[in-house]
Image 1: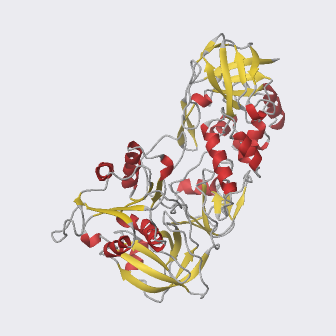
Image 2: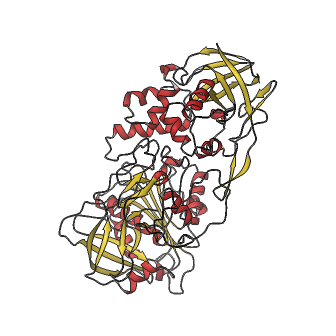
Image 3: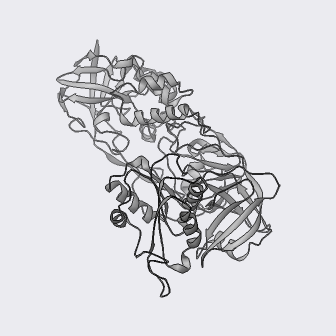
Length: 586
């Protein structure tokens, strides 16, 4: 007979960790007497990071006494106490190999339903003083699981646990956990899991992504259920030499480069919206590595990139002032998942400033394909002097059967003509989109400055546009994800404090930073953090893939080995180290 051995609760607290403050509810302690279990929590309990823990489908976390005994032996610990794994219920019985998604249990006067395995993050490693704990739980098949509260009630230690219903498909916690985190992710298993109504929304979304990856026979590798939106593997590793065949002034601040492969071999066509890493600089100075979107329809003969001069931009000033026709630059293969989707829905292309470049490539593709879709071109810039590609866009739109265009100037010059050069004074925002009556059922592609992107994304959501129809590309470093870490003012990426390391050169392409590796760093993630390069992570042990980033060139080693490999051409920075000079898309 299964029994509830301990009821454990704890409110979030701030703890010091690696020079930062972590807000976490991982510390739980047993309580005596009955406790009320409510729809979202147990009385006296709380979660520090509600994005990753808690909520209706993760109201109560369950861990087994048998797993305690297992870890005591494996970790050679004799001091583990109930609540150590952050669980609310410590139970006798209910093994992960036996409990199935959708099973229902009566405990005390409350009724529960099993929804998903635990998703373990770095905070359990802090609590256990074992940094690899997140990977160990998955690798050893002992994650524990979450309950949803069907009927609120009172529970206390000693209560019997009675199963009153079995979940459909009889897929155990052990099976479901392995299906997501461990290859080969069999299709029949994914289809079975998706037939279980009780499966939580997050796990359902991950399995749908894995199944779609298999259905479409996508060439993209990696774990689509965990990693970033998948895109085809890069056509080559590292850099290839390209010759600048032409240099074009598109506006007062934007310069385009027409690039042809210097080795004479054709290059594959890029997907509209993708970017390339570019290595610039003279032989007597360290190379500058930057990422730029391709700004036209690409073919096997040439590519175009367009670069805005920034006041303190070393690379953009070098392009504008020093780079000449005939010069050689090094180019990485096209990358990125911000690409034009196939379909018949309306297409809405929104951009501000130099954010025009990837959506311009999409407009080229729509025109070349003689698209019959409804296409909206919405662009914002300062004035006519800074309005790059204006005539080019008008010509492309004229080749489409169904198109709309609206251009905003925030500070027009005296000679800029309303209703000719631009349509309205101001910024492109959600209020304008509402007044233009853009189709809510379209696919929206956004690129521009960070504020533009966040404001329009929120505005489109408020207009009722589904999240999966809003596609974004942010120039420069992407948004960080550091769960539980107390927020601090953003800092510009910089060289780490202290003397330069003796190791290979690590180039962060989006941040424009070159750093020598040193032995004090445990991983590429730790190096990036020391430089305030924006990063995304959760487990820090190669499980969750939140840290998966593009590896433009070079090779890495892993410790620990990831449970599932990243996509070809990507790297998990949380558990990797450079084997030589490398370039990362961060």
